[in-house]
Length: 85
Image 1 (cartoon, rainbow, N blue to C red):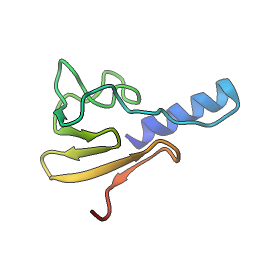
Image 2: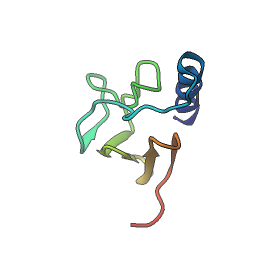
Image 3: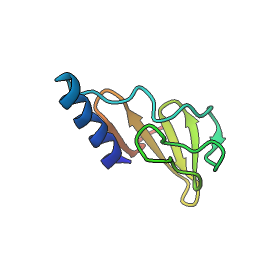
């Protein structure tokens, strides 16, 4: 995910002169598992990701096989393991 987010920011910088990141990584509904019909991360990954992830809410995702939660920060462009409650 981080490579796709970084590339998005670089493209924004090249086209507008301002580095910015997508407001959302996809348009998937909260609490939805990623699947072929509606993949996750389509804003930053070509064709998105269609398995092993669930969108918890607008900025949080769960890697289903490991149960590890990740947080997306659309200001800093980071996607990292969630810390704390």
